[in-house]
Structure formats: C-alpha cells, structure tokens
Amino acid sequence: MHFDPILWQGYKTVQELEPDLKQAQANITWCEHWVIFYPIWWGSVPALFKGFLDRTLYSGFAYKYHRTDPLWDKLLKGRSAHLFTTCDAPWWWIYFAYRNSDLNTVKRAVLQFCGISPVKVTRFFRVRWTDEKERQGWMEKVKQLVV
Figure 1 (cartoon, rainbow, N blue to C red):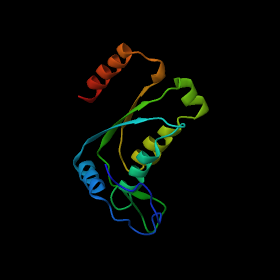
Figure 2: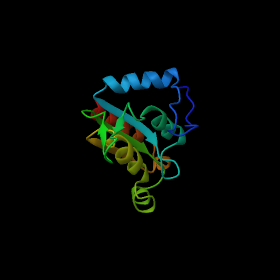
Figure 3: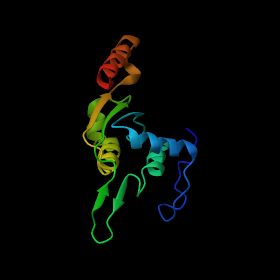
C-alpha cells in the first residue's frame, strides 16, 4: 500500500485519502470479519500499521462523536476481527513488561471503540527461536482459524 501514515494536521482537517486507503475503507465496509496480522515491535505495533489505522478509521467512517454528550456511535458494529501477532519475546515478557500494550491499542482503543466485536487474538511468541517445523505448525493453525 502507498500512503502517508502521518496526520499532518491531526484531526483538525480531513486529509485526503490516497487511493489505497480509499480501497481499504471500501474493503472494511463490506467485510464481516477482519483478519489482521502484525509483528510486535518495541512492545507495540509498527508505526506504519498505526498510521494506517489513524488515516483509515477516522470520525465519520469508523465512529462518530455525539455533539451533546461524551458518547459516540460505533459505525463498524456488526463486524468481528481476529488478530494474529508475532514477536521474539516470551509471552510473559509481553504480558508483564509491556502489559499487552499492542492489544490495548489495536483491540480495545481502536477496533472495539469502532464497534468491532468480538476481537479474538492468537499470538506466536519466541519466533526467533523456532524452527521450520514449528512455524509450519503455526501456519496450519492459522489456516484452521481463518477458514
């Protein structure tokens, strides 16, 4: 995909979406179940993925704030998601050291905020220390879960 991941003016002005982001919004609009794969980098999501979320799931498309109260409409309600993450660290490091910060961002602060629920999670840890056979087993697991 080709797009600028930076919101140069925040949400003060609507930044024109590039064709790839318009296509992503069209895909999100018709999909019922969103499958997302990402690596955990520095305890969170890669910057480009975060930029994709910032640029694509903005107010009026994914959610809409109310004018008279602090609540919002969840415009992506009726959809579900499954997150697949990879990292080199063991599970306990991601949980205790980073407090699952990637899930707090992607699952709770983004997807559920926009109405996507349920959001299932499958994690693959210690990737750097696995062999081809174990990775093939993971691929079989992914195939079973997404079909």
